[in-house]
Length: 206
Image (cartoon, rainbow, N blue to C red):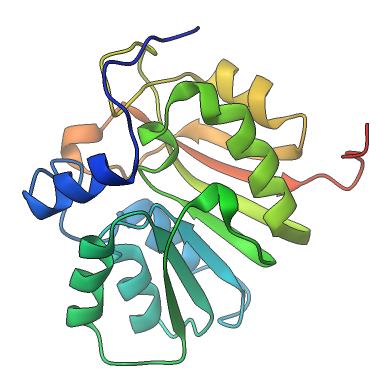
C-alpha cells in the first residue's frame, strides 16, 4: 500500500517532538519482549545495534544485564542527551546522532522497537536491505512490529505478518513471526515479535 504523508519525517520533525516532550510512543522503560529475548542470548559480547533508539531504555536495560557492545543511533540529539544523563560513562555503549540509512558497521544483532513503524512506509524496502548489510554472517534482526492496518495516519504506521514476510524474506530467514504474548497492556494484540536471521543465499549484486 502506498501512503501519502502529510508530515516530513526528518531530523527537524523528530528533534521537535523530543524537545516538546511529544513522545507518546515512549513507554518509559524497556519493552519486556526485547529484554526477555536478550536474556536468552548466548553471549553478552554480541555487537548490538538499536536504530531509532530514542531515549534508549532498551540500551540502558541491556547494560544493566551485562551486555558490553551496544550502539544506539537516533536523529534526535535531545533524545540521546537524555540517555547520556541517565547512565554512567561507559565504553560499553556508543551513541550516534545520525541517520540509520547512512550508518556503516557490522553487528550481530539489530534490535527493533518503534523505529520501523515510524519510518515513511516507502522506506521499508530500504530498511530491510540496509539491516541485511549491517549484519554479520548469521546475524539477526529481532524485535517488535505493529500489527494493524497500514494507513497514512501515522506515525506509527501499521503493517501485517504477510507484509513483513514478503518484505524481509528476500534477505532473511524468518525464524519467528508471531503474536507477542508479553506486549505492554496498551499494545496487547497489536504487536508481532520477530526474529529474522540473515540469509547466506541472498546475492546483493543481482
